[in-house]
Amino acid sequence: KQEVTQIPAALSVPEGENLVLNCSFTDSAIYNLQWFRQDPGKGLTSLLLIQSSQREQTSGRLNASLDKSSGRSTLYIAASQPGDSATYLCAASFNTDKLIFGTGTRLQVFP
Amino acid sequence: EPEVTQTPSHQVTQMGQEVILRCVPISNHLYFYWYRQILGQKVEFLVSFYNNEISEKSEIFDDQFSVERPDGSNFTLKIRSTKLEDSAMYFCASSGARGETQYFGPGTRLLVL
Image 1 (cartoon, rainbow over the protein chains, first blue to last red):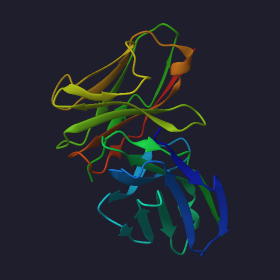
Image 2 (image 1 turned 135 degrees about the vertical axis):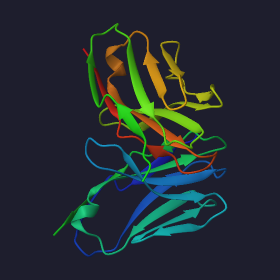
Image 3 (image 1 turned 90 degrees about the vertical axis):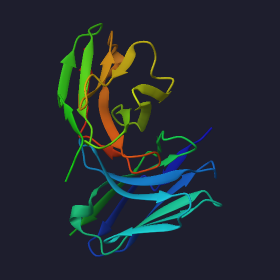
């Protein structure tokens, strides 16, 4: 069964820290992986998409990597800010467009 | 910047009633999706739609659910006879091509009483 898991479930860090969020998936035949941000009670904002042929993608202070052989992706956030506080979701697709989501990492960045 | 929109933002209905959730995908996108998120749980895939037909559907998407693209801009999800367990946030998403970024709408919060 194709599954996506995320650890840690919650993370609290002081402003300015660099941090890494982890995502793992069970099937190495991944099609692509997408990272999202979700604010409480809100929709999903797409942050980065990594195709299976890519190893990483960068957008501003965010960098996402993909390692198919180990079944892992990481989202690196540089110089974290209180405005980064949200839940971060990773979602993978395998052979189809259907996204399979992880349970998310709830991030709090305190001043 | 183009975005996916959804209406209504909130809907309360009685068990057994029909509801229609509406979505306007990004205008030049061709692939459309519905997902849902029960409170405190993972986001779950319901259905994907391309070229006026369902491409894939999950086990959740049973005969009580249907999707339609009634015109060139709207994409709807109908639940024929709602159950208590249908209470969730329903998200519409669209993408320009297979394997491209899926852009999500703000969601419709459905509460079935």
